Every structure is written in structure tokens, then in C-alpha cells.
Length: 162
Image (tube, rainbow, N blue to C red; front, side, top):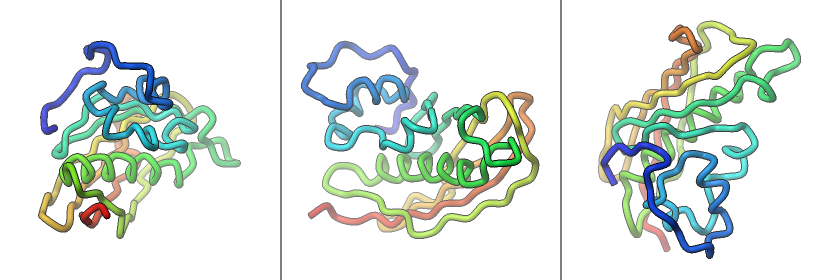
């Protein structure tokens, strides 16, 4: 699963997956639908409007709208930054873990550099470490002008699925 994909290039899928629409709207490639068939992309991914553009264990890119994800002051909520970072890092770790294993987040932290009040935020996760039991990704969130909004780091533990 280490190839980078382009959304919308997959073939058709049987209509047995109850999360098919959510997976398609989130930009998840069809070859990953079976892996996510028991829980979809996650309800928070759907709720926040996260859409994947690239997915591999080494690099993941996704966008998230600011609209609907603001805090009371009208800027993107800091927690939304962390949700995007954890989503990217966890998907990368899960892809790295492979069949029969899964990833669980054990640490996340972020520094917020600047605010944004409209448009799309892009998160780019880059693997720092892809080990047998731990993965770490750095996630940089930018605005539509390419300005860095926040930098996060997420570490996941790889576990055997019971």
C-alpha cells in the first residue's frame, strides 16, 4: 500500500460497504475501502470535511475547510488542527502496520504559528520514523497561500490485531 494514489481513478466497488459514500467523499482510494469497511474513514473525518489527496505510509496530504470548524473568535479551532494531524498520522501508521496489525496514537503535540479565518487548510504528514512498533509523523498545516499555520508531531504504537 505504499503507492501514492490519485482520488477518482479507481474502478467500481460492490455496494456492500455501508461507508462507501463517506470513503469516496473523503478521497479514500477504492483499494483501501475493504480495509476501512468496518468503520469507514471515521465520523470526525466526515464531520470536519477532511479530504485526502495523497496517501502512503511515508506521505499523506489532506485538506479541511475552515468554515464549520472555527472557534468562537472566528478562526480555525486549534483542536481541528490536531484532528487533521492525528487523522493523517494515524492513517499513515495504519497503512504501515499492514494486515493483522493496527495503530493506536500514543502522543500528539502541536505549535500554532498563525491563524486562518477562511478557505481550505492543507495538512501534509511526513514520516519521521516507520518502525516495527512505533511510527512518528510530522504534520505541517498550511493555508491556501502556503503559509505555515501549525506544526504537529504524532507518534503511534503498532499492535497486533486480536
